[in-house]
Image (tube, rainbow, N blue to C red; front, side):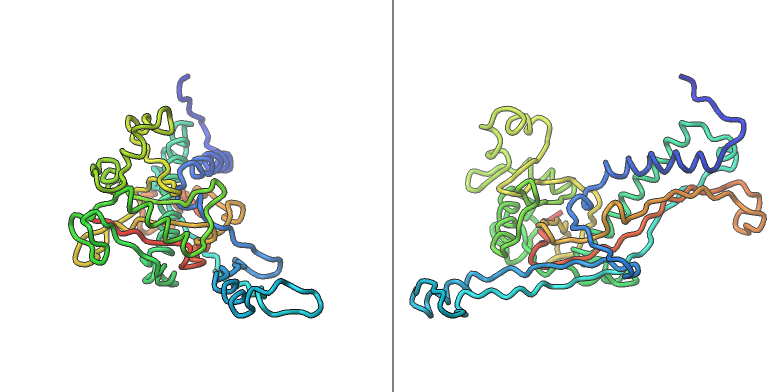
Length: 336
């Protein structure tokens, strides 16, 4: 059908249409936000998100109890202290802040806005919203949000470096991402008693360049992505080789995100790939984000737009990215 124009644009109608389309498109584009633990906003608590996290119990608690008590069976005559576990959840909170992005639009387009223009504006708003939200979430984990105002903290202290070149103590130019790196990083979180997500997998967020390094890695002396998949038939195996879908590796499900910049690690340009466990990263739920769209037309007092040619379509939301536990999120560095 032809893209028909309306003679008179209705700002309310345009706003509702763009918002509905943008929010749906945003939900499909998100990567990092799919692995958050939503914070709670109790009544009369202002705009602060709160989480209650249970601290992982050390295995030494049970071992020491059996050793100290010589393996004595439990009796019910008195309350015994061995094997006693203390329930002391860690309280974490974060303040909600408003973030957003806008697109400049010609006033002539705003006055007679065709449906095709609204669709493109909604898609663009969702794309920019995705970049903004995923950047904020990543910054909370990898420490790049330290310099934000307000600061998002130094990020996780759980880190690992690629071992492709055979040495994980220092990152060198040949240490590009491998399937074995993913398996070892997942093992780090398991050793911290971190729990996987509901699908039974940990989330591994990588850039497109490390993804290419991973799928093109060839070796007969260690675990590779090709070795994992080439003998498995169907979509879960050989079809991955044709489609380039990384998929699962030793308990880690690999997801692609281009929203990763390089950092200097041991004088090497490196990607900060992320490995996340349940309750490692928190933020506002989709319901608490309150995404909204505003169509702003230029006013007569607009000194930076004296001819009143441009307006804006703004897409805003609120959230509170928060690293909840350094033992449930890891940075996996790999050479660029």
